[in-house]
Length: 157
Image (cartoon, rainbow, N blue to C red; front, side):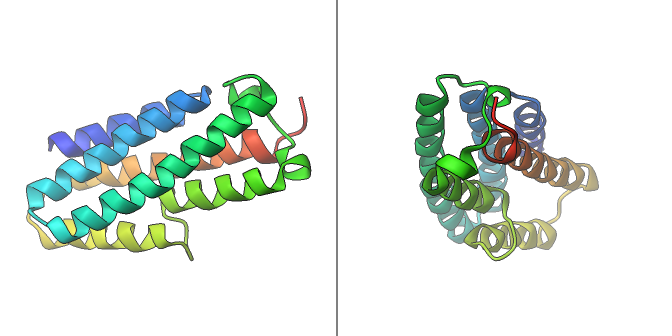
């Protein structure tokens, strides 16, 4: 139950952030809640896959965030925009990495999210915890769309 509350809290707070680094840090908190749940299931195979892929894509996302912060001179995502016109490589890398973190279809992220949800449904867990986890995952998708919209697709400020 503690892992599901952590996932929910991290997801809600990350979806409400406008600071790029805080947004990514709180999304990591949400993913740590998912990892706590996998530890409680004693499902180490999925845990190792999830941990490896999360580390790989989160590190790449932080590198992209650093690049965007350096380019725009601000960590506030509301002050960014228009990156797809001028910084296509950085924009594409941010889309791929953040898309993998939230489990977009046709990415490897959907694989470990599917494994996670399968492990969740195969264990005896309360519906309240499942609801918290699913809402936490949906909040992760919201932060992804907010991040990519403000940093990449929004109008130039």
